Amino acid sequence: MSDTMIFAMEVFLNGLMAGVLYALVALGFVLIYKASGIFNYAQGVMALFAALTLVGIMEGQVPFAHLINATIGTEIHHFGWHVPVLLAIVLTMVVMIALAWLVNHFVFRHLVNQEPIILFMATIGFAYFLEGVGDVMWGSDIKKLDVGLPQGINTAIDEYTYGIVNYGFFIDNLDLVATVIAAVLVIALVAFAQYTKQGRAMRAVADDHQAALSVGISLNWIWVMVWSLAGFVALVAGIVWGTKSGVQFSLSLIALKALPVLMLGGFTSIPGAIVGGLVIGVGEKLFEFLIGAPFLGGATENWFAYMLALIFLVFRPQGLFGEKIIDRV
Amino acid sequence: MLDSAESYTTEDGRTIGPVVMEMKNITLRFGGVVAIQDISFDIREGEIRAIIGPNGAGKSSMLNVISGFYNPQEGDVFYKGKKRPPMKPYQVARQGIARTFQNIALFEGMSVLDNVMTGRIRQMNASLFAQSIWKCEAEREEVANREVVEKVIDFLEIQHIRKTPVGRLPYGLKKRVELARALAAEPSILLLDEPMAGMNVEEKEDMSRFILDMNDEFGTTIALIEHDMGVVMDLSDRVVVMDYGKKIGDGTPDEVRNNQAVIDAYLGVAHD
Image (cartoon, chains in turn blue, cyan):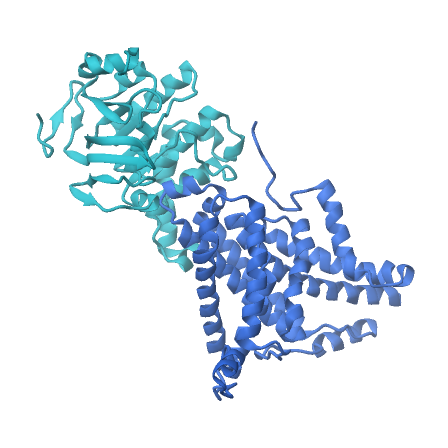
């Protein structure tokens, strides 16, 4: 096997891993879009907020410490205890559910039957609001998140591939774990949406509010549930991305990477989010390696995903797996 | 007058039971507009009860009051002998009152089967986990629910479109799917808002047959709104007539037909 082939294969595998991470973010978008027709711009910020909260709870940080110190002149920062990882994750989830309830109660409950663009604008507002709250609550410094996920090169794969092609593949342990997490998450979400009463109710609400009410579905309940689920997915994405690159503002920008994934996979399909993520992950890494770096001067990773998405928009607007737009006139 | 707890047998041999729902002095206003003014009537178990009246008489508003979409400013609703507090539509639905809509409210993206299955949501109680892995009580429940749904689909003769997305169906079939979803809930009262609006003669005959059979075979209590006088008089056991938000007649089709106020409302006299 030629060297290029071997390198390309490594790039391919790493692309798959990156794709899983993109898919993880895209999933949160799909969930909310499916159940309420809202494109939730705040999904990335929710991931950031979840990660910030998790770190804050684990480190025993005092929420709103700066605000409290500035107003009453105290010097408090930490409670002085460390919360075990699992408990901290559960507590963070409680915070995310509370957030879901608040968002629905104070904002989206009042925007029923509004135009999609208004709902979209509301999520932009919510995104910036939540970003501010996250800052004030936990501080804006870059934090390290360590929930005990393995990191660094996987030596088993390294040695195994070295034995075969005389070249050790570099695969990050964290990426492998992320893949497993994403797979479990997707199976669980698909089972939930397809087979459970709540999942059915969720799809029903997305389709027609009046009809949903008439069969006994409470709209508010479903919306809180959906935002909580999105919060949960944001938490998972926040943990994985936060472990990878630290908990900092740029975490919220991963949302922008999810956009082309969604255009490719379809806004309404959970499997689509996964496949879309993988295609984009692999596509941008391979394109950079085979064409971008040698012929175009590199840095194609920044725009490749969007270009691919644009092509899809032109030829297949509903994405790979999206629901076909049917309308009888 | 028949007591509200008594039952009686109709000429064609069906048993009409005691009063299941009673509306007492209902008044509904939208701002300054009075949509319903001081109306009282009851619905008996097993009967087909019609509400008729010219356009804008307040018939749909009445149906919306019964199903909880509107809450009246004055008056009380009694359901199964108990006074009903103001409720949300989904709470009313959970009490066993199903309905269809004048301009059809279906889940357009789902198949016919899935649409009808949503009618069974009230009857799904297995734990979330059991449901997602399709085991234990969830499996039994799903099978039982599917049985009811298949029976309804069979009954309304929509087997051939079971897997079709509802968005692709023509108007008449959509109406039938909506009826199927409501019927699948095994409601104690079924509310139909103009089930025959916009249908041709043949479709109307089909629909009339379904309504009669539903009542006969499942013993479903039906309250319906309809424009077509001929259809209403053939179908219903008792008729409420509304005009300008007021009740102007109530009784058997024959009684109503000979009521002077009703004749005036339909043929038109000068209102002064």
